[in-house]
Length: 495
Image (cartoon, rainbow, N blue to C red; front, side, top):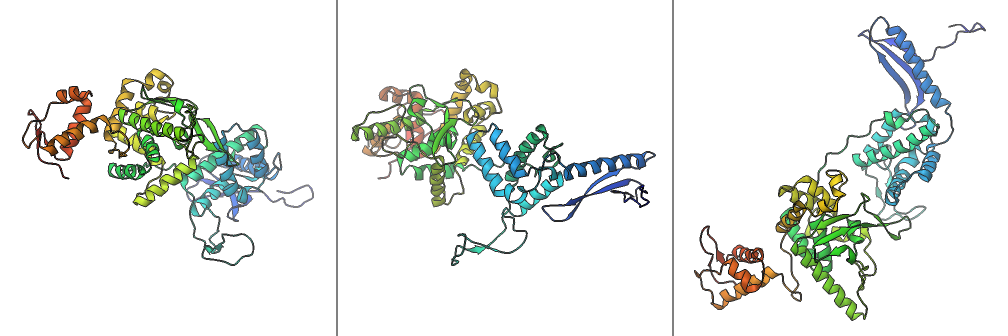
């Protein structure tokens, strides 16, 4: 094409014919800031009578996209956009801290100085791919990871860098953070299109909950019960599936032990300054969870120890005090990360690969495996989906299915260790008296055992409690049970 001064004007972009007859449009778009390679926008036009015309339209459109990036409506950088977006975005405190940490660690060092108008889908996808190769942006170069900044004498803590990829779920979170900020930039007319909407993040990871198996759960409970107060916290995490922040924020007025109901209303978290704060639960709604009799007994014993400590301190009980606390008077709740770290140390001592959130998975999977409907399970765990409307109605929280869920999970829980200074559960009292009768010879091998109705009446307990006492003796091999016949004494207990 000739210009007015007689010189030939170089045409931007090119159109080439492929062996199939299709036309490929290719437009130079600069250098990729991530890989440093030349970057082209391409589009393939199928063969046909109008292919040449469509190819010219595509070339014009791609050139316009390049010009939009070269001459953006704003010269603001991604750092400036993120700062402005964080000022106006309505984000929960804990969510905001997570966003800021990910942006400061992974996004700002690499893309922060890049003008917003220069971002495109290919740049973002190249960025995501780099994160999945190495979270430290090593670029494939060997270097030493120093634990101390500035000049220093290296120690064993200064080690050669080993590439560690960022997980797909973390990369996806970064993608959605950027997408939200860039979407706001479009609304503000800083840019014409949201490049994150055109970029493809890693596929979502396949859900793989890994709760402890029943044998490991029993070991965890037994180890935790070395400290009865800590054992009560682990027990409640297993039976209710409550989140760590919800357990940390739990106060005595949230418990109705007479009715066997726990109300989860608040969640504890650490603010940016490391100060313990409270907020709404994750789904911004309170939920009521039915408690089984054994869990009620656990919490009753916990409250008794709390009251006894206050008496020694010459203080009075306050229903606003925390249920779980590192202080003798329960005036301050646990830091959520303290609960996580203590559980992690417990699991490590036992050689079990587990984390605190796995107890939530344990509660869910045990209930589902027992045949409890998913909506009821979702209600107990406080999930936003899977019966959200039902969860808003208190009657549904205490429905028959929720009561069955509490009892079902209790039956699948490992046996709770007991402290010798604390009163035993009713069924253990019945079982221990029967053991004593067998040990003393008042019940001899082959003698019929009293019926569960007689045991219930004699000891003033329910038939179910009497059944549980008989079942515990049967499990120990002290009683023989056959269908259609009275249970009989099998033999003498050890010791």
